[in-house]
Picture 1 (cartoon, rainbow, N blue to C red):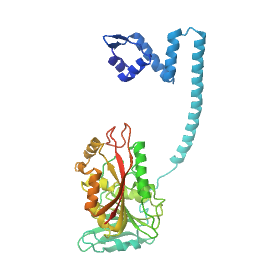
Picture 2: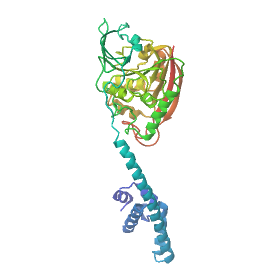
Picture 3: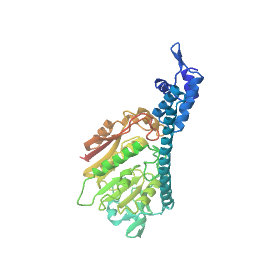
Picture 4: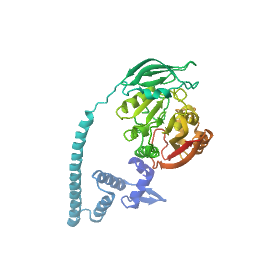
Length: 411
């Protein structure tokens, strides 16, 4: 039997077999510059696997082979060495077993706690639209203040109503959410499977990638400037990881406008953030249909929103962001760098055929920012993936993706 057949018999690769040969655990004959494996090699390989199942380390297996080959286990001293080794192993596993049992018992207690938690699904979990926000409700088509009809007030907030304009624009307020006519029930963004979960760092991501997302959220949070007065901050569309991660730490004086085309996702965000203490405005619809006065936002948090919009709609949205921001308004965001992950981009393109992957280099983001009236203040690497594992759906194993954090100001 040659080395390839021998490796196949044990479902191993040839490199592993050669390793055992180099460490004298396998001693095949060599003919015509090729290894020939006989029955003795099969017996030795069976022993190696048996010892591994017993929990012996490679060093301990090498010791066992040495003792057997040199004494055939016919020496009392050697037999005692073997007995001592096995007894130490048994004691070690008993200790581990006791620790494992304790861990099982503690996990069972924790499981009882989580099993008793029931997720509350309340419609209209948010208070609605505060009166202070009414002056910001403008028609996105003609730029005029919107008229309100059939309004319902609950706890000092608008919970129901209609928003109309003479030009024909129409939106409604339902359960405290502004619904634009172009909103969708499900998201058009298909980068990962569990996209409608509250926090998008699910088990679809590797531990490395989840840490990278946390680093990105931290970068955004730490770059939010402190202010002595209330400000208007916008999140979305598609991703709000930073908002969810730091909702308990954000300034309660500010108003946070959350936008997304998916009503399902907006409702989930509304439910999750209902007890955050933040003043939140939820809008379901495309960014072109959002009924928000131009020049009203102080800070736009680009939590991969520009990237995800590019993926979904095939174009940048910096022109829309620029219009919403006040003069000297701040843009804080994240951009993915896929220069070392071309196959991953092509995999993503399969779900988004209109995805212009040629626009993904960070230089394209910089150029489009500048073209739309932003002055880039900083763009730095927050972190990168590594290792030969799949970090997110459609990621090609072995390809590295970097996350860049940036800040820009409206000129």
